[in-house]
Image (cartoon, rainbow, N blue to C red; front, side, top):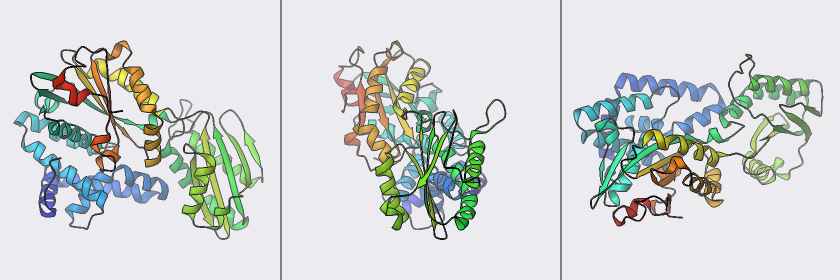
Length: 398
């Protein structure tokens, strides 16, 4: 990986990146992100994680000491400056527009880092890499070549939220809304409580067509249930049950309690703990079905192949699965969920132009998962699947 070789070089390149983004635009972006983080404790923590690259850049730009993870992210962003330097004038224009888009709204720098990492990995495998999306305006991002063989690579980012009925962002917002009410309630009802929730219709922080908001309605239902001393409440949208909290870790730290709750309710449960005075209140919520992050990826792959690849050359779809935590990503890998759905996609008519699919997360960007353990799945029915020149880029790794 072509990373800066010194802290001074990294900071110099970070300054150059901020100049590419525009100092005024950068300061405005950081101000917005900081406001989002400060606005709510739980959702703010999620926002800080999602925009970790931007905060790493800002800390480096200000000359602050960086953690190991921040250092890696800052170096990856700094490397984008050298990408820019190697582009033609028209390529620079498109690339800088991509930076501007990554620094607006709900977007992040992660997809650009994924694209650049994908290019660097293929360079390390001996391929010549052209940033065709920037240079030529192609629907695919990269054109790679080796020993006379070429392939197109389309990089795409999928939020794991698309495979969840209960969105983590909505869950965090719900907990932030409930916390003040719950603090007051716990002061009048000291004790240890567990509210178990099943949400068959899921939970999203969006208004329905009739103007209602499921998050706000669930918040009100919980408040009403507690105010009326109800033990249970249920309808087609939610099943709520309030019980005493019996876990021994309730006497220990919150981290110890969360560990026991995770063991008790499983990796897909949405958990939260609120303390007040001598009271403690635990929420544990599940959707009405298992998460389908890998299924969402298969559906995205089927939509991408006809629109992002020309069919004139073998195509590679490089997927970046965002908004996962370490446990979820590890389970997606260990349970072969992504492999199963990727291989199912490769049997579909939409996959006829695709010679391979790769999967990565931000944990690969952090260096926590090595390139040697990359997830790549070859399409054995593609005519180019057995080309020796393309083998390093298409051979299955699992």
